[in-house]
Length: 258
Image 1: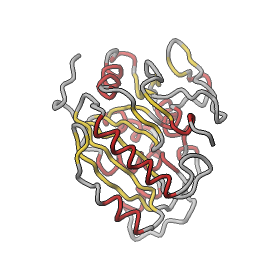
Image 2 (image 1 turned 90 degrees about the vertical axis):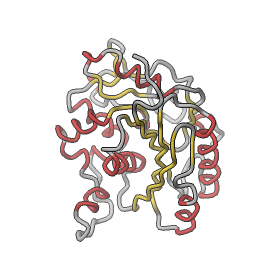
Image 3 (image 1 turned 135 degrees about the vertical axis):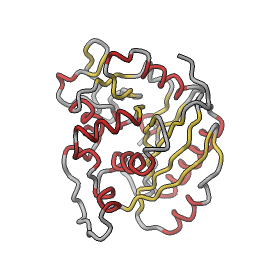
Image 4 (image 1 turned 180 degrees about the vertical axis):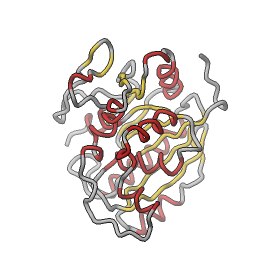
């Protein structure tokens, strides 16, 4: 199957947090520098398809960060535009809440979704195109998500347990590390239908019921974190499969002196 740049639309979601962290980039200033590097990277790397870059700011209410990010809204990247979303910091669901928030807001505008945390760089051209081909090449395998990374264990992450080339469901915690990878709008909607809690995050609840005051730290269940983000695909009956190589990506945190 040949994919041309204009016959589909992909949302590449980068989840950004500009507060202090334990690891790289550690500070707001470091995250601003990382953001600029990501933008430059997405301007020179060709994804092989039409791909907008969706930046989701897990918003701490800092007006200087909002102003800084808003200047990039609508600017060009390779084969797409930058879109800036500010997600109020009302829950501890990290990047995974940002992924869901972007999907909920823009789900009818895109065919595929490529989710990534802010400290992972794409190194090669045509990676999104390859991932979509990989996703669709065996339609009878009930594939739900292509996992982009298999961490090397530096920060205590374990490698994927595999079974017949898939991420093993027998493990009980089958998931894509960092929630990074690619899926389709059709599959995401099906997961949300079969696992109703999937899109019941505080931010999405606030969109639907703005008069309700959302308590802090409401979203603490298994659906709110790294494992739940793609393990719910398994609960909905889909398979998870690792991408063909880790070498297409640089996980900066795993390659930086901490």
